[in-house]
Length: 193
Image: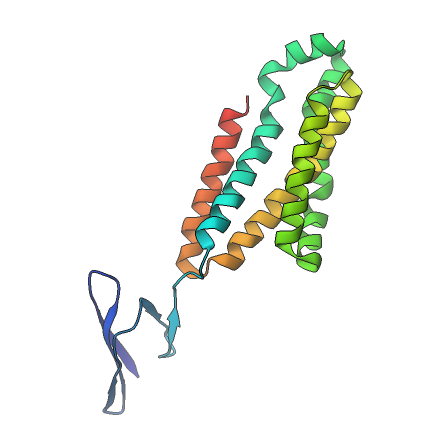
């Protein structure tokens, strides 16, 4: 069994011919397809509204990583303003990591059980609320608590966001979507401090 196809520059298959023991079938033009070794065809077209999904997930990831790295460059000033010693300063830096480590796997499981979009939306609100709580913190320990909440929210944004991309983009389109997600990750880390 063999298969042949001719593709135009627009990515549309003009003909697909399947040959089995001398029998050939010509098919009408179809949208871009991938030939599968079994002789069937599988569509690689992305479902509608995936661009919006990618934008929201990439922006959420960007914000989560900015929140994670934001106090790194300004830690001496933050510690001085809050009267934080060495221990409290260490907790300010590490607290988001604690929240993220504790919540990453449970957040992914919750997204699988309740719905990834629902969890992603809820934790985006939690990320904003915890940032608003930490910004005017009068002491170091309230800032640490807010940053732990930021870590929990960030874990769910990362876990559910990447799962949303996996569901929205099949095949090769998933590689490109994941690359954009990774770029948002990197930009968030770079611009946070």
